[in-house]
Amino acid sequence: MRGVAALAALLLAGCHAAEEGNDSAKSGEWALILDAQGVVFRRGEAEYRRYPFGSPRAEVEAMAAEIYGDGAGRRTSNPECGAGPMEFTAYGPIQLNYQGGQLSGWLAERGAMALTEEGIVPGITRAQLDRQRGVRLIEDSTLPGEFEYATPGGGRIGGVLRGSGDDAVVEVLFAGANCFFR
Image (cartoon, rainbow, N blue to C red):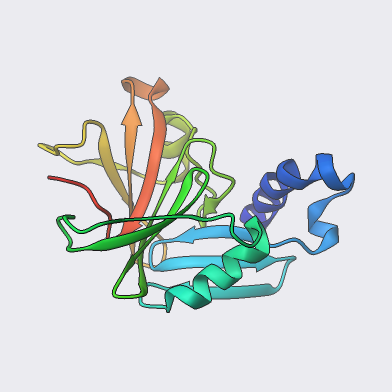
């Protein structure tokens, strides 16, 4: 977990260092960690706020405002998702998914300033991903390059690779309910 903390601090530092001129880990900034069972907001080495799937949207978005700023999230919805009607709040390349006013999933695209508990971020190569977690390609998926891996806690995180072989790039990571048409 110490490696994840360091990576989270580096990711967050990239967001704020230019505007603040200091290390965000020292300034007490929050970082977002994507989890197979929800999302975790982390500050420093010991302060966590975990929001598992099923957490109220208002609580999750209030915490997200601590990172991204009030009103930074772009809200949309889709009444025709395979999992049923969904609402979304996007913070740049990170999307939090909601059903019935509760957190139900997330999706992170390349450029997302967030990582999984395993330290995986969109943009790494298949070779890097294989070194960190064993992945299983989903055969016959309607999403070309779809894969999944098991987390240490027994959950599953999915994603999509673009390209082939060890140089293929993780374009998207996701967990929970998402609005994919299969």
